[in-house]
Length: 328
Image (tube, rainbow, N blue to C red; front, side, top):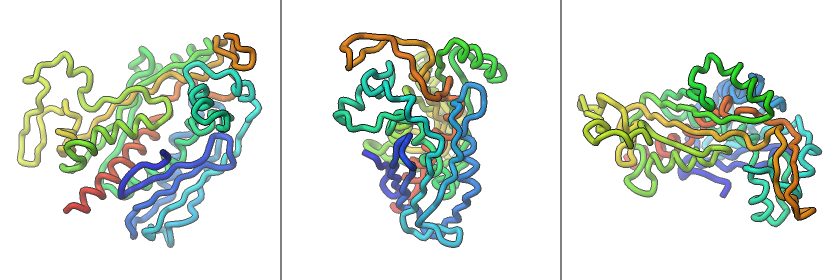
């Protein structure tokens, strides 16, 4: 539905062109210093501005209305809201009857029987990742882990020093391109996750696939392990803490964190909203017709998705961290 987590539980609300979007964070232990500058920092990392990102500019000035007093969490639910200010809903009027290829327009209309807010993608919009980033910033204040993210590939490009010129060419063509983001978490502890239904890797997958446009997730060596033998992919344990010589497992063994770095790679598909003319079914005329999409969209979502995925991962780890502490 609209919530994730057991002890650290987040509930996401809003749509792209509604008055506001936001999140309710339940389960933050009392006495956690809530540094709002860190939330602002992470929200700024999500903002567009670089080549290949959307021209839609939002201030993303958040407001915390409950759960924090004198700079510390009270133990009550934290409510954080962000006002939508830069809205151009008229760009989406034609999408009521002519769904974008590759987008959720068609399934949304069928599932919600035409009552969904289709403007700007509504509930399916990447705009909803702003409050998710905010919640993840708070999650990182709870756990003792060190998070980082990097864009490692866009289309066929692996040399990120050439990214601007690469995306300029894609933009001129009116098309879009996907990419892969690598997440790393250091200072991990042993014991997060369960053997079956709450495996660390299954929880990571569930959260990553909840982020719009994510189409693939791998942990550690991932699919490249297909070309390796067991003797090659097995990680040799070299000391009593469980440190391993290699990290093909990506920090997860049997669904449980093993204390080595957690390494996750995520594939973000090309944006479905492109300037190039496409053919799609028109429910008003009952014909397949050309569609030219208006609105403001990223050429490459992956370029600014790193902090979204990093903070989404932080939410998963905060929940499992608190669960692990509860059992001790």
